[in-house]
Image (cartoon, rainbow, N blue to C red; front, side, top):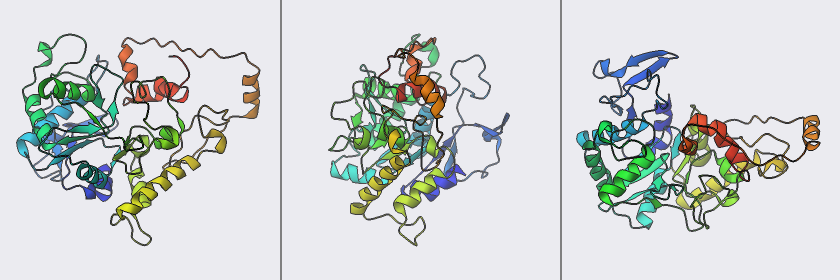
Amino acid sequence: LKREEILSTWGKRCDRIRFMIDPIVELESGVYSDARELPDGSLPDDVVIVSDMKRPWHNCTGQAECRMIWEKVWRSFCWINTHEPHTADWYIKVDSDTFLFPDNIREYIQQHNRSSEDHHYFGHRDYHRPQWNFISGAAVAYSSKTFHELAQIMQNMPPASNLKKGGFWCGDSAGSHEEPLTAICLKKHLGVEPEHIRDSDGRERVMLFELIYHLTVSRGDWWYWKGKPDNAGELEGCCSYQPFAFHGKDFKEVGGFYKLETFLYSPPGDHRQGTPPRFHFHYKVKNYLRKVKEQLPSSASSPRSNSTTNPPNASLASETMLWVKDEYLQHLKSLGPIPRLVHVFFPDKGFVGHMELSMVRNGIGNLILQNPKWQV
């Protein structure tokens, strides 16, 4: 269903698309199947089983991190490099919960005179690790030169047993840290640095979280803002009207892509067909952002205001709002000042920085997002 939704929405504006899937798939809760055992022709031609993955994710008991995203990503790159080399000028690695705007990416490449024969690696640049910035994994663009040279490096990476203990290295290691490891491989072996793609007004083109977060949460002392340039947009100036990608839980379930596609790309009477003229498109995006923010009551327009609602979590995919009773608010007002300090006890301090993990995003991540003035 997710594949069909992608192909019916943003995927139809791509020249070529491949769905890379794990060899072990979950048919239903607790029931697994090995896709490598399927008869030839069982899957559509655009679905590729990453068949040589060595680390199973479904029975990795005793490991702190069972999401083997790094291995899946680098083996996927190697598969493309081996089976479909040089079939495109540009390659975009996209998460399944990301709505991509291929037309805007093409336009950006042309306007900025980017050549696929030069090294390019761009998207939403993260600055919070100063020793190696990286591009967040929601949508990552590579020139053909960079992609294929990187894939060659990945094919010859040292195994985990040869890597130093602790830290991140360009090698075949377990875990989900595909973003920093990709950046390390590119910098160490090719000298390639990540390129930001903010527009001339400082607005981001790849939105990492639900749009309502970007529209209502101002600059604060947490990983997203650490090291980010002073001219980077925030609040209503957060998001470019020529976006590359929207990412977040609004798109995890089937239906979110269809709603956005209909809003942005469907002229009246023309259901999900065609692309709007370029000079009209940014007005549609601006209107969409306005509608997202309008779903919050005016008193909840910013998490820093004295809101009477729960932290903003509205989206076009879900319009449910939860309200706090006045009696409880009066009780809170009767209490003394709340210390703005939170101590978190966790074995791996760096784990808190990985908002792509649901446990972090829905736990300490939400605390940090909604309370930027707190010290964590």
